[in-house]
Image (cartoon, rainbow, N blue to C red; front, side, top):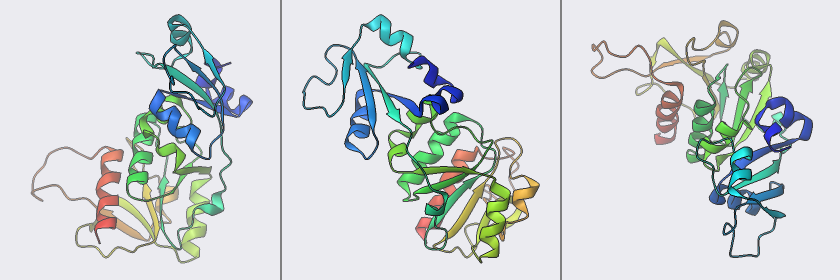
Length: 241
């Protein structure tokens, strides 16, 4: 069953995902999430007192279950928590929105960044990477416990938020310099696809177009920033104010 959780269809069928490594699993066990079972090599979690069902396995068995090139000493089966979209409150806090971000490493890094900058909700288009993909889970470095990820038809959701008067920020080459722009403490920060940026449907709801300038401004270097790096710059500037 553990191997089947590598695929989204398996995760949906069993309502569970996998996490690897003693540190991450320890955090999950201590959190509000429900860890169904832990498979561990002899010696892992040796201190005892663990609030989880542990089954000892051999190194060969761990290699078969693991999704990592170099298997960890433990792997856990964790119940997928219920997430409610209305928890994403852009009226009182910052919310990240992701339009077709498909690289698992990018999504995991963005979740980790959100955690660092105190952003508890990320709203994703339905074609974004799955936040319970094993690669995403490992890249979050535990942020998956504290950051809620919601999947929805993003363009209509953004339009509804705009109609409610919520500021919707997005990054564009013709946007206002983020370092001189007026930024609010609340609202939605929309980030786009790795290669194509923000799609036209979602872009139509953006009320504030921002631009991260290169240095010096006249320099012609890289065409764009990686979406996770751009998210870090933007979140840092919002929190700096």
